[in-house]
Image (cartoon, rainbow, N blue to C red; front, side, top):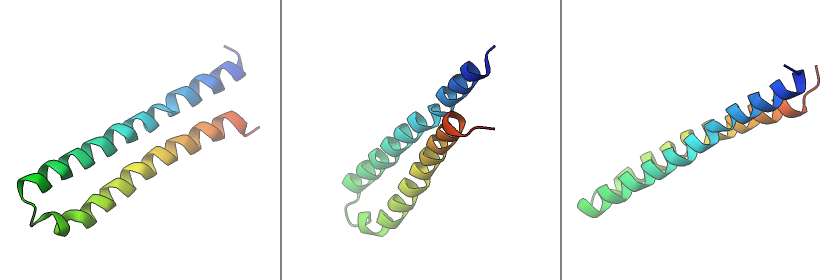
Length: 76
């Protein structure tokens, strides 16, 4: 296998993490909305947890993007 082809395949595999981050963010917000509709008085207390979960999930997606870009553009 050519080294350039291996880099492209590796970058594509690394991008799967961005899809996982999108699914994770959807699950987090969906569950928060479901909980907020069931018990609206507790929703403001859980908003900090919502933002923290969003930030951690999104950071993992950004890390996978970073790995993909490193694989594509860094010359060794």
